[in-house]
Each structure stands twice: as structure tokens, then as C-alpha cells.
Image (cartoon, rainbow, N blue to C red; front, side, top):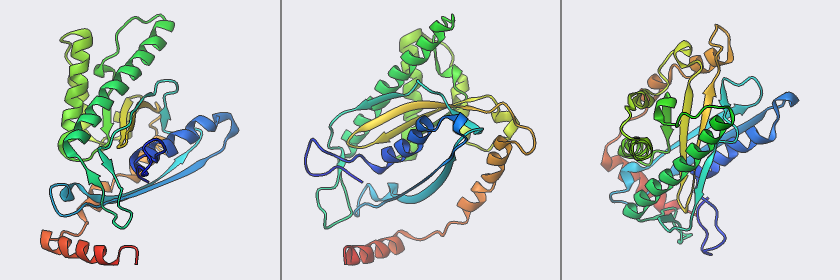
Length: 263
């Protein structure tokens, strides 16, 4: 699901499509209807031999979207940015490998992050003003952050970028709570209850969004939040069970994949 050859008509990168697939049902299914949507997302990212290959991987996730959710999308706050950029695209249909301009892609990612966060912040501050609250929004209002992760260092740079934007906007306020976002979902339901989770989604081409969720206040035994946390409690063990292979083994597998692609 990448950019097509025509510069105007394009299909955005799968990571962005996944975000739209998950958020669209949340907007289209009023809670009063008591209806559910099942969203299944998957991606395989492979690159030719070189610097980009170690950033590849594969994964899939299934999400149930509906009423009484433990994570509630905050409506009306999404900040979105789109522009035309050839940072990552697939002009060669005989190969599954993309053409990647790594330096340009990082610039596009950070520029999109700036634009999306600024739009999100404007919207949430407008909501606050309507409620009679003049406090500026900063990352102190976000307990956890999740980012589109092309490689791990990008997440650290992105969090620092948001803190720098807060500094430019409101001066040298301490943003220590933002670092809690680095601790992932290893917490108990009680620790997560009532918190805000910020999320940044990016797809080369490019399109990006910054949005947020509110975690349910109900963390009692048997609650949707407790069930969610329990269902992913074994995630570290599942990740540890992955098969380790040498670079030579992986290269051989990719060489075989190249030979049989489209055959």
C-alpha cells in the first residue's frame, strides 16, 4: 500500500492506513448503537541489503472497537498534516523493496510531528477555553506517549522534539511526566486508570496525525481495562520467544525471497 507512480493520486504507507482503519470506526459507530467493529492490521517491512535492512520487521494486531471501551478516543482533537514527498516509495513493481531517502524521511517525520502537535495543541486549548480553563496545554498533561517507530532512536528524538515545542510555546516548564511514556504498558490497570495517552502516527508519502486516548477510570477486577492489561501481560515473554538468527541466515532467507517474488 505505497505511493503509486502518478504524483497526484497515491495510496499512503500502510502504517497510516492502519491508523485510519482503527480511527474511522470510532467516529462512525455511536456508543448508543451498541455495535462493534473488528480492525485487523498487518505489515511486512523488508529492505535490500544495506543500512535500512536492520530497521525491517513484521507484525500484526487485531482491535475490537465499540462501546464501554477501556481506551476512549478523545473526539475533536486530532491534528493532521499531509504533503507530497518522495521519502519512501515503490516505483519498481517487480520488487517488494522500496526506494528510501533516509535523511529526507527523518526530516519529513519531524516536520509532520511539529505540524500535527501544533494542531492538536490548538484544538485542546480551544476546548479548555470553552470550558473556562486558560491553562496552556503541555506534555505534563500526557501521562504516556506512543510513536510510529521506524527505528528506536526516532522515538527518543520525537519525545525531545515535543518537549522543545512546549519550551518554545510556554517557556522552561518542567516536563518530567512525559518520560513516563517510555515505560510502555507494563503497568497495572490501577496505575493506568484515568490517564491520557498521546499517539503520533506517520506514513511516508506523506500523511500523519497526532491524537489521544483517555483510559477508563474503572480498573476494578473484571473491568474492560483490567481485561485489556491482563491480555497483554505476557507480551514480554512472547517477544522473548522470537527466534534469533545470524545476519548471514537472514540474508540467505531474503535472497531466496527475492528469487521467488512474483513467481
